[in-house]
Length: 310
Image (cartoon, rainbow, N blue to C red):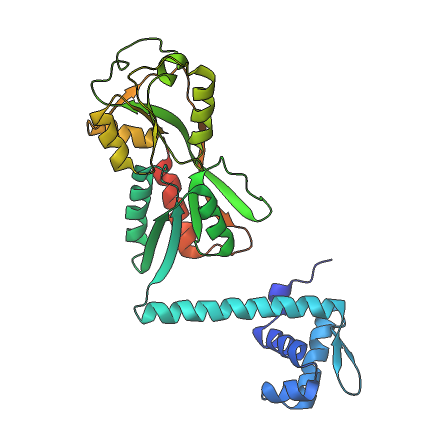
């Protein structure tokens, strides 16, 4: 059996149900709705006939919603909440105000994909201010759950609660190893992990997806005979890492999309590793409980288009 609510229900009837659910008193609800009590009573009775369900139990002093009544009250409240949001958006647009979209981005996310998506979305969303911030993965996830960012662009290495978070894959990413242009391993064929492990490394922070992979590789393949090589260093600065590559024989592992940018500008060269330290998708994360706003949907579409073919 279907009720065809779209054909039966009116906003006036939903307003009556919502007000009755809040006031639990027919006389007071009628007054708030600028109706007479008999008119409000007739309107409620007519709605119950249309729905073939009792919505409220009447007593001498108050009205108690039935199970069906409670359900309809909740839906009515959501309808009016959405209408109020639509009103705020329209007033903001007419007043020249800008909406904001807050993006939390992992530093290894492709700057090319992000920049192209932002450029496209700016044309489609001229009234939306895009705000980006970069943090470690755990901090971004905490900000997403707290509602401090709207979307998180990051690697899928992080374990998330799929009951809370919706994950949209964007492109496949893998790691690359960079060195300075004159590095002795650059042209060597068939490198082994031992060759790489016994060089000095520019290490990413411990809370990045690549760091555990690098640590494991070094612990397995690094020997004790490393005279003149010098110690590893750790930094989260790309500028400092590139400078170290140019000044020393150190190696640096980063996401391949970033590595291609540095190779294209002759800031570093790629070293052929036996295999990738890290493989997996870069994704867009959002809270399931939050309704997808139109500008967020547009931006996610731009992200998918920008990442297509990588």
